[in-house]
Length: 240
Length: 240
Image (cartoon, rainbow over all chains, first blue to last red; front, side):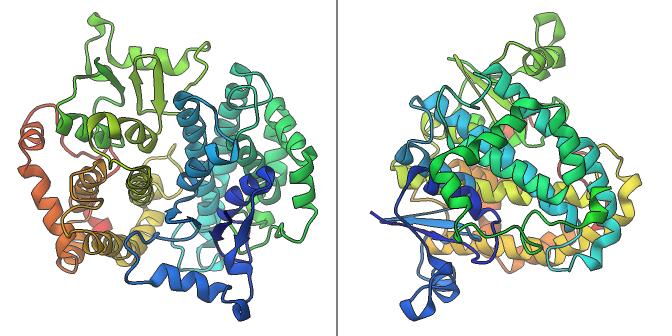
């Protein structure tokens, strides 16, 4: 069984949360839109699925995952589907929904991070909304990053100190790593300061790349570098 | 078994998606923060759970639901938990995750609707960010409402024309009703125009209040009126 992931081929974006789970599990997967058009892959393959008028369950937007006959969209729903299959969610129903609840909270931060550079409209460029972006980024840096990271710190502290759920790695841990990596890329000064107050979050961010499969992935060409087309963008003026 | 819902007592907000599912199912539930402090309920009861330092699984924010020993936060995760228990999700795993995927897309629209009046920071008043709100609301009205409602229309059309998932009511249908009701409250002109292009979405919005339990709920004092403290706010200048 080879999973097919469909996502924009030039950014980490929301698809990266799925890529990290697949990589950690050593799962066989194809990142379809990054493949070659000559092989029937690439962006045209993604567009075909997205725009297929006969697809009864069309995703609103990438990412989406094909797992045999099942096609799942929405990042958190993809991870909900993959979690038990990859051994990256808890064993009990309560653990699994708690893992998902944490993922949804991470998704909330991701949306807010995106809106720091696009506070008006996704159809406009950053330059067309820079005035608003400066104001929104200030609130995000000063209020939201501290509030959210303190919550993750609290969750780690109330659990075993090193995992968000139970005693084993879950996709929520991988996603928190990715969130912190993105925040450090986009807001290095602000995030660095907040991490000093949240040592368990900082330690988790440091520990995940030590995992052999994640380390190999991050060092490979499969890991797309952060850039200014993704969710997390480094515009120094937004870091205060 | 009595469910305990914890949410802000004076707004529909995100809690309303959960209330509608519980009401449609005729489930026994307590809307804890709307209860009396003399009975140990009310806002202090919600704050106690949220701020309990010994709670190993603290929600980041309301709403959250207590179901026996399980406490679930995040609106979509609450509905994921309740769906099969209330008979409001499909029977198969594929149906259930598709229902959830639709709910997550509704949640995306809800967040964007909220940000039309709070595009800069939730800690500021609307008046403090009205300039930015005018710009964001224009993009939301002109681009996002049409895009999202067209997607729901497409999903209804690809299914049976009247339900989003399968041949029976799901919580996704109730949530789409609530989304449209909120958009009509906040943006009556813009939403009315878009609904004329999406007749199945309009028909679903009209049909849900005909359901006996939903009709009784909407006519009861349990249904909090829309107001300018919730997600959907009527500021006429934002409707163009």
